[in-house]
Length: 283
Image (cartoon, rainbow, N blue to C red; front, side, top):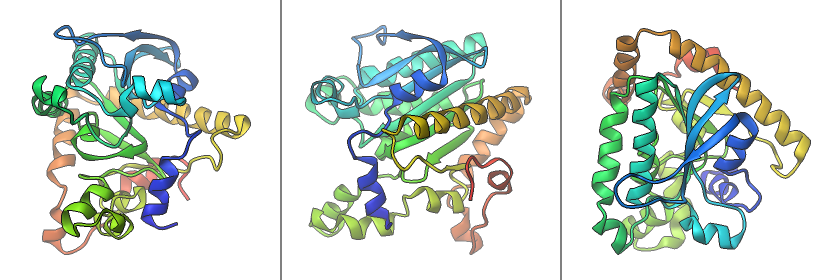
């Protein structure tokens, strides 16, 4: 499949959403609500849970399955209240020493008038700033769409994992085509140039884990095996990250983002040795 065909896969009905991952991988999940400033955003599902008897904070961008639910959750387009809720949960995780796991699936943050009035840009910027120095391990899993600052606001992590058909980019291919070509129908062409696929991002060290996904998320047996494998990998990686010295953890996270783009200066990009060591379902 080309890049745009993979993007269309992430938009198909029946694909697992953040809540499906939370319910399948974690135990005793307790959802928290509200940003303690203005309100609650259903597009963000977050709270505390157990991962193999270890307490963790888990946060997901939830699109929903049925039409009414998708409308209620604004199709996964997060409001400022949602990002502030997520940050509140992450700061609480830092206080109590809980690792953080984020699941991202969004075409971008809410961009309506209300979102701008409530400080969308500031809310995203606050998340980026705080996550860079969060003194607890963070793993972000791109499970579907990952577009613009709406996705990045939950993706400043020690490790980024991506399903093989997921994408992560500064702008959606449709928006990119509209800007560059003045023609949104050229989205497939824009997608190829954006280098937004899991395969592309793994090669340039932005993504640590390339995850082979089920051919059919509605196949209960196949999906269950997939979730069990992801759970085992999360347990293993969080255990290792939690054992690291906090200052070293922060230094590694800082370096992860500082090195992005260096390949252009050095003339070549090499696949990360870390990816080869612990890639989930790696071919």
